[in-house]
Image 1 (cartoon, rainbow, N blue to C red):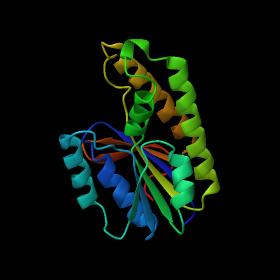
Image 2: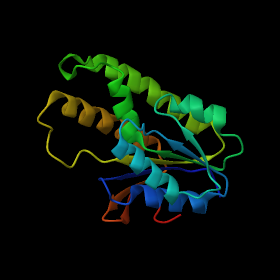
Image 3: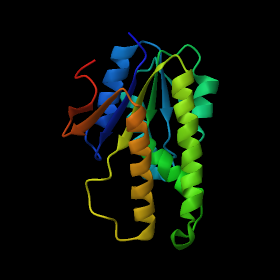
Length: 188
């Protein structure tokens, strides 16, 4: 099968990760799973453990809360497929490294750091022989958040999603566990 770049968008608990795993399994046997989550509290540790149990034990996993393009280049080896789950937390991680006080976060710094992150990922996708399956939350269907940090996050993730959707061969939107083709051919 030819190299592909697939972006899977959806809301929380829409079935994005499950579908990404199904897609990855169809694209190849040797899968590198790139986890961006950080276990900063007990509840998140439990979520991460649930995600680990849902993945094939034959898949290699790396944790990359930021610098994903570089980490994938270093670790891809003979992977036929790279699953990045998820861009949602990657954006959150980058914003979190731009300041502790939401009132003082420099949005230009956030834009610069995310631009570097996305360009590094885009170059990696282009230069790596593996297919890519990217997972992200669609944040543009809700209300505008009532606080500054929420608005920075929503705007930043929306920009990242748009940029990667333009580069992707196929984009799916998950609705109640059902993949809806937004861009590209239906099915794999």
